[in-house]
Length: 344
Image (cartoon, rainbow, N blue to C red; front, side, top):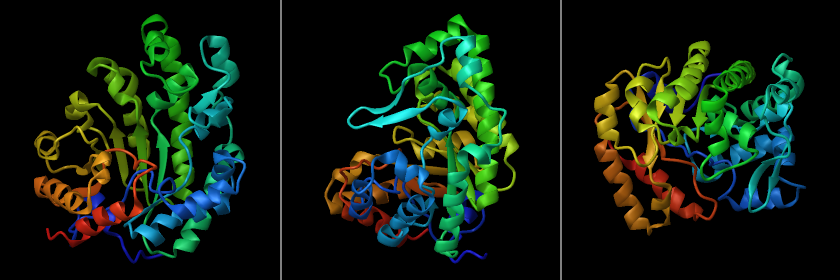
């Protein structure tokens, strides 16, 4: 099916574009009243993730209501550890929680399975993508995604979020062979999972490494970037975006990755990053999500300043992380309109 709006894909491939494409991480839900109404009628977050026609509905909502240039499938990065054997719960006000964690080789064998048919355990994501593609009818591209192995590793070791991730980092020193084995298993499953999404219709895939910034450069390259590269090397069907939040020191090495787009968090300067990576990559980002708390005029000014800092057409406009749930959707619309009105 031909896309009516293929700006995102052209920008990712470094082809000519008439304007910058724009979408938002975590756009599917959170800020939209339509999402909240649907979510409120369900038992919880996981019911929404695991019910394909509902996941498709909330995936399309931001395309309808925000006029973004791409949809991103509504799901969660933690479906991977759950498929491996670690069930999680979303606890209101706390976030994800795993009752069982990986602390030993025995835990690894019991709760880090990876030798199974991915469609048997994650087929609901495949079905959600298929429904979404049909209902989008070529309006915009559909983005598939997964969490990076290091970020998934952290949740499987810690059992949830953490201020320090000291348990995860401790394993890198005390039992690096166990850490590498778990990371390898996550990587293998993630590759198969992303290929399933592509086969179902995803036009581009993004790998999110939310906790990249908690490691020093050498450790991140060994335990983080190494596995991101394995994923990028395995995906050649569609453009690939790698987003390593906080990994500024690793950018020169990230710029050797076999990907199309490098995501920037809001602490990174786009012009400086362009000098590091050159013209071989598209950059994605990177307005501070908190900028959307400003008034409409200030949002326009901040967005224009960011756009003025771009030295190339190889950009996809986004925030430097996911949109926050209490942001006014009208402020998001101002951001998006400002990008669309900007002449390049």
